[in-house]
Length: 156
Image (cartoon, rainbow, N blue to C red):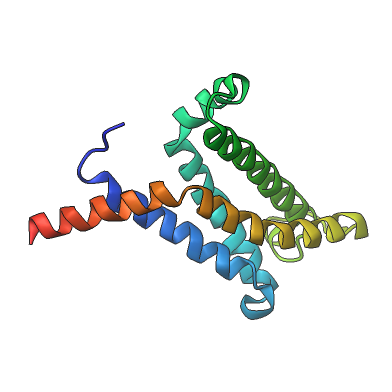
């Protein structure tokens, strides 16, 4: 798929913001619970934009998984699906154990130890899962940076 000339820079910006916000979210001891929760909400919105930009990939995922002709594409598909489910799990459990976000929108807080532990465990699993995700897509990331760099050189 040929990308429009301006798109690599937009994708780098979007994915860069996604990565930086993810790093900040992963350390609630640094940001504090309130900022952790509000950043998580923002992250979820940016993640939805990321998923929408790759919508065609998601549409083709069932065919990719059923065909099993390319092991690399199949592994990326399985891993991305697992990563998506992990993000849903950590987001849902995080929302259910919210100490700041829920009260701010007027909802009562009743934190269940089950959801709290699930949020902690799934949050810790997502960190290495994202690393594997980036490694599996390193070719795409590298080509995106190369196209962006060539565009900058051509306009200089």
